[in-house]
Amino acid sequence: MTATQFSELELDERLITALRDKGYDRPTAIQAEAIPPAMDGRDVLGSAPTGTGKTAAFLLPVLQHLLDFPRKKSGPPRVLILTPTRELAMQVADQARELAAHTSLDVATITGGVAYMNHAEVFSENQDIVVATTGRLLQYIKEENFDCRAVETLILDEADRMLDMGFAQDIETISAETRWRNQTLLFSATLEGEAIREFAERILKEPVEVEADPSRRERKKILQWYYRADDVKHKTALLVHLLKQPDVQKSVIFVRKRERVHELAAWLREAGINTCYLEGEMVQAKRNEAVKRMMDGRVNVLVATDVAARGLDILDITHVFNFDMPRTADTYLHRIGRTGRAGRKGTAISLVEAHDHLLLGKVGRYLNEPLKARVIDELRPTTKPPSEKSNGKPSKKVLAKRAEDKLKNKEKAKVKVRHRDAKNVGKRRQPKAQSE
Image (cartoon, one colour):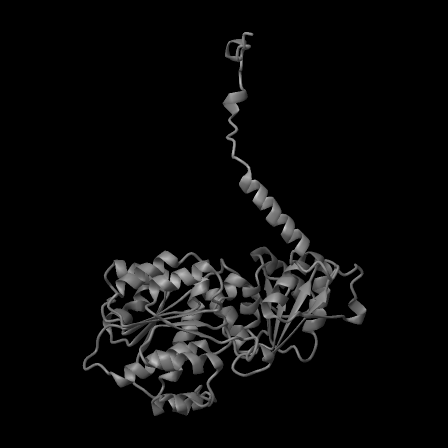
């Protein structure tokens, strides 16, 4: 039976108190599914998009384990959590500290963009949980500054993103270094695709698979629709109009490319909208400052690329805008997960040009719920909407033709065409006529 209250999950009273301090009494879908098997010591393969409470889903079981089995003397970390970005590592560590506030458990981070000397405490002092990015951690492992032998639980957060960023080999190296561990927890926004499945098979041992479908529970909190736009200029006008509405209190605007980040931030400032931005090549201090300005309310509009916004966790985002549509439905889900967090309502609005229509169809099929179009009277598009039939899904006729062509090509004998066979063929190389 699925737990409906945290008190039903056999958690230590100190953890329950910390949850109440944060205003949480009821577990989210992924927490109710993942916490019991994780507390039983099983490996867990979890599918949970951003904003579904997955961080607490893996933190609570390991905190409970550390409290149930305290060590007699200080030593190296017992729990290692890997994240794709520095920002996410810091946010996970902050949440771990909040949940462990009424205990004596210690939490530390190891990330790039931080001076080596700032990590000295991790090597010299007692640490129960370390949250790390792969690159800097591997450096310390190779230098024998980080002891993996005491790690009992390895946790991979946003594993799909780590694979996308090319960290698969690094993670497998770290997995091998922590081979004495008893448990591995892997969480991903989606379990679709062979890559994440094959990767999980190499890392996990007979895992319990849990999945919190946001389309049924979490996504109901996020209103979604789109506006058609003629071009970039029209999209910008729509965006400026929407950002000036009173209900748009704090928003994140997603674009595809770094160059567009700077362009759009400049256009919004010209329109009188105070804006900050995140892009991949910013130095860490500037990234931290941009996030801090958003969190303390000095700025309420953030423009970002998908890579730069990974791990971004600001609770009171009311709106997400897709200025550029994402190329995959999975990325769309990651984006809209920045709003509607911690039980709040949220809104996700996409600005769609004609060439985005196929992407819109992909998103609708993925969510099993087509997005509805809206219109602003004074900013109506002048171009005609694409045909309803052109939803990006091949027709039965096209699919049948493809299958037929594939079969024909398979039946044809392959003939190797070589340039030398047709080159400089003189009389001496011509086949002689048959004598009668």
